[in-house]
Length: 303
Image (tube, rainbow, N blue to C red; front, top):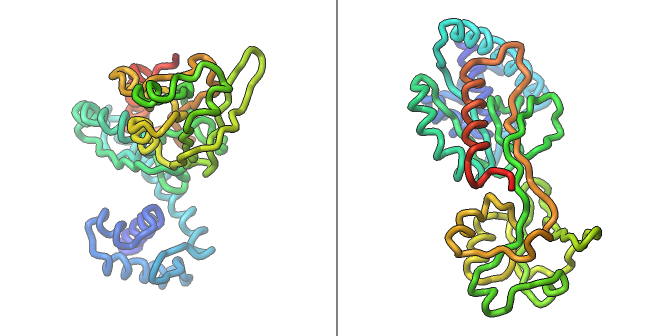
């Protein structure tokens, strides 16, 4: 039993990347977490972590042991869920991951109704701008950009949103509304640096059968979509974002689109789950619920 507790603590430390955070989530002290890992290392006969004052990382033996532990715990969890499903009750914890824009604006506001409907389910929502290791981090459901390179995952497409160019009415009144691609040369450009690729997304525009990549130098570059919107609202210039991010501002008139019908490109999102011999009911109901929420939200419908 002591080793089982140590394995649970070990897995949580790897998933959180931090002894203190893992201990807090498990309801124990950091000292207790360290003791459990030390006992686990004594039991296995290998060092599991490289420790420094700044960070904790797995040793090669630790990484192999982690994969074995996750697979073993996963098999146990699946069997428990299978037994629970036989009673038709939805019980347990669902680990859910999504990027900041999607998680904060669309998923978190929808969880109140989910928890009301399934009171015996708890949700661990991870909102972060990175692509997680769905299997390695024990993610049950991920709402992430499509496609992901991992072809072993189950993917269920939910959202496709086109890119649009926007600016504030005050900016457009002062500098004029561009009517052609060439007009962009006399405007200030705001670029978004992708958290996925760490590169600036190009502006691709269509003129007849020709696709033109705008070469206007950016006056401002940011790695955050909300910061880009705030910059546009302040009159800093014209920016490129997906329609769902700016839909509320377009409705309120705080932003206006430019060069409508000429902007190329779109961004798709899917619900991702691990392949399992038995899909726990708690995961199925969460995936179905998110699919219903995201495919019917007026700001996320394809246009």
